[in-house]
Image 1 (cartoon, rainbow, N blue to C red):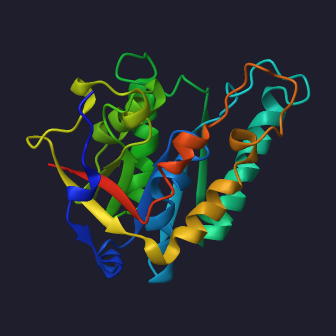
Image 2 (cartoon, helix red, strand yellow):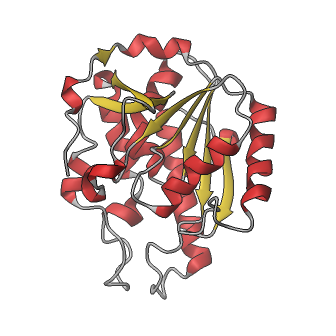
Length: 241
């Protein structure tokens, strides 16, 4: 696959987030908010902007064979990890919204429950009136990430500006998954002053980055190589046209 040369994208200063206003972060899974948006969240809070996080899935398929952490226990664990990460980034618990769709079954345009889910997410927009929305890249190679974009794209988002963030594109993406100039504008944000906070937030997701869960050998774990891609002093987004 042709890789994106992220460092060729002009670097925006951290102060530009003061124009983002009330911001909604859409996370398909607990950890996506920190991996893809930990820097921008921390900067938004640093400059006094309001941030909400919407967690779409229950995350229970990361370790489906664990007896120590059956589905309900794993859901609770991953939600607690998100709350801990959000606290580090400056987002209070009351600004976290849990949708609890089944992992890998976030409703997509092909699912019967899609319209009902769009209505529910649209109500969140009506209540919060965000000015900026961050959602995974539309072709990020994970079904829940693509479904997340489809949900937001189908909502009445008003005048909110949509920023799409890649998670799995470099790891699993194909050439046809890459952004094009016709659909988006690349945007790279300087997060150097809050990179340590981002890394601390990522570290809260212990079930995904350590051997915390020991009784499911086939369980999911983020690789060191994958984590290193998010330990850089910038975050890259694609602004929807």
